[in-house]
Length: 299
Image (cartoon, rainbow, N blue to C red):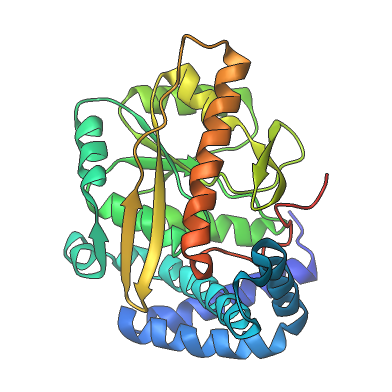
């Protein structure tokens, strides 16, 4: 396969950054990540201004301009540090996981379900370090899998999937019937399916009220919950400081077989997004406000 020069350049930059961070300890890598975030906060002015506009449109006068700028900066820093966490994923041993992350009691219930052969869907929004959330769960023995990442650059896609697979994350190819059946099979084997629900979708979606607007949210997680008869746990990753994380799990959203299929997947999707919105409003700096596909943009 021939690759475009743009793809090769992006891939080379990513590999160079990864190599630079990976020679450092986790603590020094996150400190360097902060320096990179400071630089990008200056260079990416258009993106920063757009993020500030989005925050302002959601919260109105609830925050001062100083607060809005702080939220936008911390959101960008979290995103950069999330990539640092991805670069370092294979370095996170169970011992290191205990040092850098606090887990709530709900996680151990999910792990117990898995050990009994009962699957779980984990819906993790783009908050805190979503990459570290998966790494931490895997380091504590939870057999977890996700959909293979889709990027415009095939070289970058392959490398990111390789990084995610290094600590033991299993990936399933997105977008075909075989993949759907594989997901259901893995859930029935007692594995946990990690999915990020707070993404704008053009197809296979449900319009839901979200952050004061309408968001078109994929209903895949609800379909899998219904078909595999498993609960959906919402995981809220939060970065408490540069090198420490909290993983909070909300009570499960259960499929309801007394409802017809369409009504139930609508209920599950809507409920999950309502709960995620509450968490974003509590800690807006933890959420990613820079997505190119703004979740509230019309289709």
